[in-house]
Image (cartoon, rainbow, N blue to C red):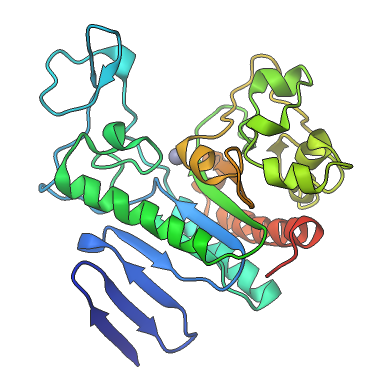
Length: 304
Ligand SMILES: [Zn+2]
């Protein structure tokens, strides 16, 4: 039996089968599976819903001081203020398999926040102006998404980890793990914990060191290598090489990881196209990510 209850803006849907509460934001454009552990999964770029109530996002305009203005009537659009609108296909499917595997292994439920709205309408992984162009409904959906992440973070009392799920189309076809450590820093062995999204982890395991946390024997990259996954950074691919394609982390990881303090770290996970567009490969990757994250958290966080 499924129970429904709606407040002003948010509806609660209670699944009696497993007791997991799912909150929905305005228009059902966001969802939050309320968890009971210290792992948060966010999926910002695989929304499939669209609406004519929100205008499409487009390039912004440059003002006199060369700052980008993101509004729908800003005037002459500029390539210097380009806006990405393509979604990350199949990342919700991967995240769901990841979520299920974590539950299977631990008996606990991660928190999972999903944007169900197309990126063309709103991008949760950008600051609010570029994300919404000031549209009131887009802003409400944006706020729902971020309020849900804050709610999840606030429910965690000790150390925790957020995994931000994305997809890319880089020709190397590797899985990219982003810790806010740039390609240049990885290639040139520049390790600055205070700018990374796992700053809290580094301070707890100062003896291990940031490099080992990122590509050493117990790193998430190594644990995924153990499942035959091609990953950068990892022991098999320590850095993206000087010219390789690599995303080091975006707005969500910057905002919700421990770069600016707190006990919650964040890692951006970018799945390549060959994994995302194969049902077999994305099932394996989702499950491998679940196993790897559980091992990683058992070593460094404790599962709470
Ligand atoms: Zn993305």
